[in-house]
Image (cartoon, helix red, strand yellow):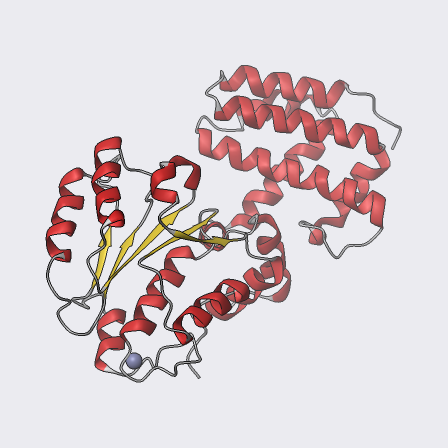
Length: 333
Ligand SMILES: [Zn+2]
C-alpha cells in the first residue's frame, strides 16, 4: 500500500475532484490558508493527477506508476513549473520568463501547470505583469497561486482566481501523520499534534527539534517561577534565550499550559488538552489559580508574545511578564 500523500482537507479534495470530473478546472486557482497545512502538496498532487496517463476520472488520485507520474515525483516533468520568491520577492524577470514559456504549447500533454508559491510576495510590478497573464490566459495553462497571506495579493488578482481555502489540520490528522511517517508513539504524537496549532510543517519541525524535552524544561521553569524559587526566578528571564524565535516558542508553551488549565477547569476532560501528559503541571495550576486569574495569565503571556513580535526590548518584556505572573493574586496551594 502506498502511503497517503495528503492528510486532511477532504472537502477541498472533493471540490477539486468534482471540477476534474466535470472537466471544469478554471485557468487559475488560489490555494490559501495558514502556513504548513499542505497547500503546495495538494497543488502538486493536482498537477500530477492532471498529467497522469491512467487517472480515474472520478478520483483525485493519480496512478503513481505512469511515466508522467514518475516525472512529477522526480521533479522533472517538463509541463510542471514552479515559481517562488528569490530573496524577498518574486522577481519580474521570473514572471516575464514564465509568460514567454506560456506562449508555447505544453511539451508532453494538453496542459501546463504553474505553481506560484508565496504568491503574495510580489511587488507591484510583478503583480501587474502576472495580472496580464490572468486577464488573457493562454489556453492549456493552469496557474495555481499558493499563499498563506492572500490579503497581501492585489484585489485584481484575487478576483481572477478561484479561491480554495485550506483550514488548519485537526489534531487527529496530524497525530496520524506523525505515527505513519515519524514512528511516534500515540502519546508523543498527540502531544505534538496539539501543540502544532494545526500546522503539519510546524509539527514536523517540533519532532526534529526534540520538542518534548524543550517543553518539559519550559514547564519546569514555569512551575519554579510560581513556586517563587528565588534562584530560578532570577534565572527565568535570562534563560529564555536571546533569540526571538526561541523566546516565542517558550511563550507559546507557557500559553498552551495556561490554556489547558483553563479548559480542564471548565470541562474536567483531558481529551482536548494540548499537554495532557503533564497533568501534574495542569492540576497544580488549577489548585493555585481560579478561572479569572488563568485568563489574566493567558492575556499577560499573549501581550508579551505580541510585544516580542513587534520587536520590543526582549529582557524588559520578559521581566515585566514574569512580574505580572508572579504577583497576580495566588491562591494557597
Ligand atoms: Zn500516472
